[in-house]
Length: 295
Image 1 (cartoon, rainbow, N blue to C red):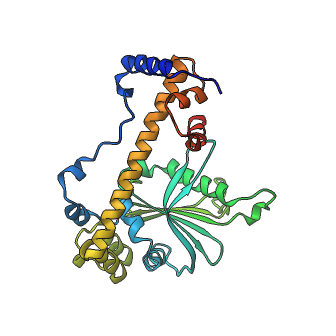
Image 2 (image 1 turned 90 degrees about the vertical axis):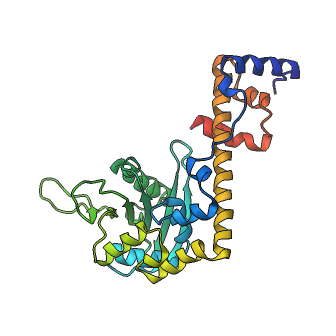
Image 3 (image 1 turned 180 degrees about the vertical axis):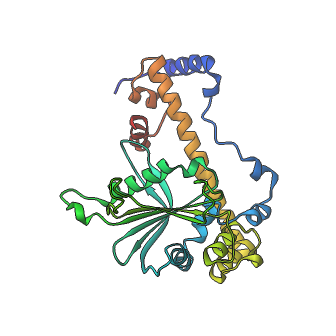
């Protein structure tokens, strides 16, 4: 490996920081305004199921997932496996962390997402979720017909599709004759702004509700109540929030370091390896940086 003296390292980093003061240090993510202004108790009390971090915690419970799927799909689904905050890695492009992924007894896979803003629920995002799940579930030499059925469910705070419907089922059709193009993919948008007295409307009320006692479904009320009202649950929530914040800081710091590496390679002619040596990045972490920079 190309050897760089400590003196040269200090001069190079100093000069680069003079040109770009924002890179003087690898700074951590700033604490959000919400976390600054609220205590942990207030923060936990303000959470709703439409908030993705809280939803992932509550829907670790399979009974909660069962209730949601039975209502949204309007049929009973036998759950075989379920994961929350599931990472789908893509070394050649954008990776995803999905809220909930379920496998049923028929071998179908169902992805459940909550989105509070319209941009996060864009149809092309739903398309990308489906395509990445497909690539994750397919294997070399597998017959095409054996690729499992996938359903992507987006629960949105507002009516992002704009037709004032409580639920939208999106399936492919042949334009010329209107017949179904049965590739076994489906995207479902659920509009949480409609909270009528139907099963789905009552479920969406629970997704938008902050107060435990106002929730309709006992299985959700019990799970949410544990984390919002019991000392053990609130303690777990504090630990979870601290972990999320620490992971966010690590991710933010890594992104800053990657930008620093890129500036070293473009402005100073360093290789990626030289730049990581300059920044004293531990050897065990360097492969992760290489993959992120290349992708």
